[in-house]
Picture 1 (cartoon, rainbow, N blue to C red):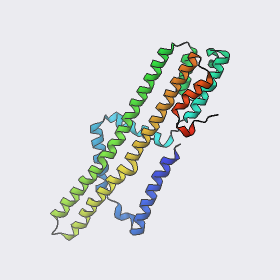
Picture 2: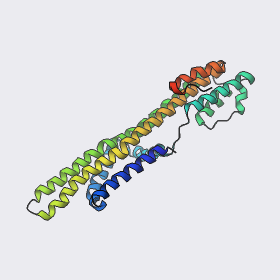
Picture 3: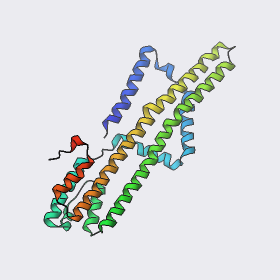
Length: 250
């Protein structure tokens, strides 16, 4: 689980709620009309821009920001170097006994053991990475759409509130609710966009980039194993995928 995502959301909600309570009551910040305008309008526009099936699926993708743990790249490299040592000592077929919890790596090993041509293996694995990137891109794009439309509908709610207020200037009792609608709509829109949608989109983008990096490292590693590259040389080559501060893998 990515505890950072959960901590960030909870901390943001708690601090905002605390600030509200210090200045008055949470009741003042509850507006069903504002909620319907912002949330309903945002969902409607997102459904117009994207396929409904993709929007529904995006909520499942969103959970990756909370529950997916991307395996550290250095661990992937260590596994590949270990496999390279086994293959160099006992041959490629010895990798048949090697099991990995990484499904993509295990699939690559299976293909390698089955005697897949290096060029063909590289091609099919690279296509998997490309398809993964496209699926993730759609999920990120949908979350970005939520972040884009929510503030706009906050402004729409504000305009509705202002129009209602101006239409009832001769009725002081109606001005308060209209002003509440105006300001709370903007508040809801900004909160929905910048506490939830935009950060989640950014986190999903980071997760996708990390997964793609790991898969490219796996492709390079398996190619090196098939070519019989010295495990130490292979390790040094794969370490190029790591930040400089993490390249001392021993």
